[in-house]
Length: 540
Ligand SMILES: Nc1ncnc2c1ncn2[C@@H]1O[C@H](COP(=O)(O)OP(=O)(O)OP(=O)(O)O)[C@@H](O)[C@H]1O
Image (cartoon, rainbow, N blue to C red):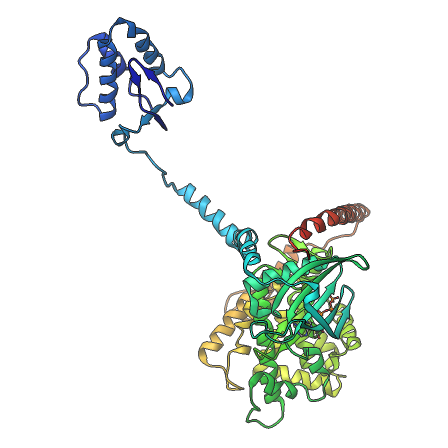
């Protein structure tokens, strides 16, 4: 702020709001009091200014009054506050700066941990507004005319997939063949997911090259998605062979193992497939993407990296930005992540479950057993055919370590199901061949078991333990006393007409809320699809 004083212009004032010098310092020239020369340099400056005002004559009296008014705090903010000037800036008292307080630090920490916790809101923003933008600038883009369509590889509900080659001679930079999916309106979401994966965990999925919207007058709008051609076979194709899993052995392990054909060798191959699949899934989950359609048909063997990779992100959901192709219920979301990969493990081990009908039957039986895999096993084991028996034998190797991992993956409640990361750390993957578990591995397994129990199960386990040790002589609880305790804690619920009416009212309320939510989602979908399409490049 510039102020005009007599005879010249006072230097520009900076808006570094500092409180005015105390009132006595301003009054002192008029009251004839001794000036406080030991005051801070800033006060000294103000005093000098005030003295200059007096010296310049009575005509300046008005200015002095003006200063007085400002001194008591009446005036516009920038006038009332002490604004330092460029010349005397160094003489200003040091700014007080930020003060760190314990509640402030806690608040900042919890905000940061919220922003960085999975699915990662803050990294998501950075990815969306910085990385995605920069990537678009530098990555090669393609147009429809750049490709020569080849063999049709597949056709799903949302698109047709072709093997293609580039119209221009492929340069070493372009690599070999590509794969194109011509997709419907939902292709926009699939492009989004593939780009996210390429930036966050490229090795988990097929190598995505480019995606764009192609609007032809004949067919209308079509999304084109391009990947590198990873290989000829999906896991599903490989599983159809009678030779499975031996037909995969050299593909993933590089050589035939020095072991006779049998459970031990098969187990090792299946373990490797599972490890690769969980690794890819963990990559996706860590970046906040849930695939929601993991099945052998969507796992391709990459000949280049000799690993299994995930394809078809058309049904995936991005938890960071709540992006998804279809409206799924939360419940569906939660059960089809690891439970589905658990199912796949199962079908890999159990030949009888590899067909669709086998899997459908298994799902029905499991539902009847309230999604309890142990109960299911009890119900079918006695009359199991040779395939199922072989599967159980395989999972029972090494004290049932495979079965244990499987049961922790196939659980109805999400909170009881282990994550892909935890599954990878399971001792099932952490041993050489079929050697007995080391002391440390045993310890880890105990820890794993303890942490996998949910509180209900843990309480049951403790109660049982107490019952075993409880005798009149030894102390503790006897089984009878514990039964009494249980009954006291869980009074039998009587079904009365009022209770039934209340339950029905609650059910109806939940149904109305659900229907409303679904309708809102449906209404929002169109708006959302417009939002997504803004991110997709259009063919010029
Ligand atoms: N990157 C790739 N490399 C080699 N083959 C691929 C690749 N991507 C897809 N394929 C082949 O194309 C087939 C179909 O692919 P995908 O599952 O993505 O499409 P879809 O099932 O038709 O899609 P949607 O279910 O979304 O309609 C696969 O089974 C696989 O054989």
